[in-house]
Length: 239
Image (cartoon, rainbow, N blue to C red; front, side):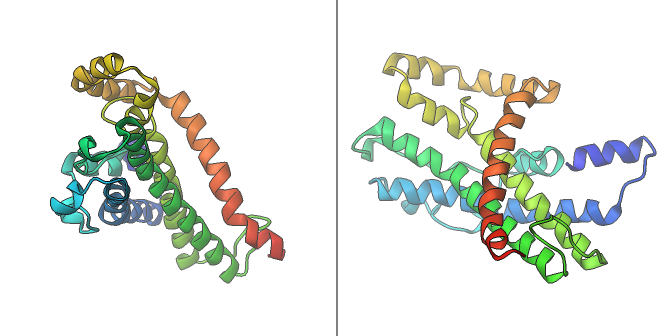
């Protein structure tokens, strides 16, 4: 992530500026395109389950101005974890509030995994066009090819990181809405009563690295799944 690259610069260590620019551009693409897609997925799913709140509040849109959160954008650029302005959801419209809220929450991380899959397909196409082999994971390097490989690789990685991060069962992340389906109403109420405190604790745990192990395990699982599916048609063709 950019934060580790900046640390290398401050320590006087060499940093490939092309890679740095590719990482920044990938982060900006995700901030202005994928995060709105993530929130759109929440609103669209809620609408299909009977809740028109996102539509009536003007949030069923891909317009980044409606979704970008400045602090969340900075977090994504620096650390690879960020967020957008959440789409409003009114569970009173749902026939089965806990189940439908869980499905609505799950739609966001699934949107990130879909975006990572598309990025992986494009990455494989770049490798193939360069004269390389997807099967071997090699490519013929050139300035533009190397840049695109880093850029698309970052798109894959950041989207998977966002999916894993949002699935943590901690308020206000999507994972907490999914976990709520397994909790009693009393436990759920207690869970969300202290969500602001839990959110600050979450950031503290992220900074000190306590959540690195579960996040890396989930990211590795998603990466293997996404790359397996993205490589499958190319490997089948033997290219």
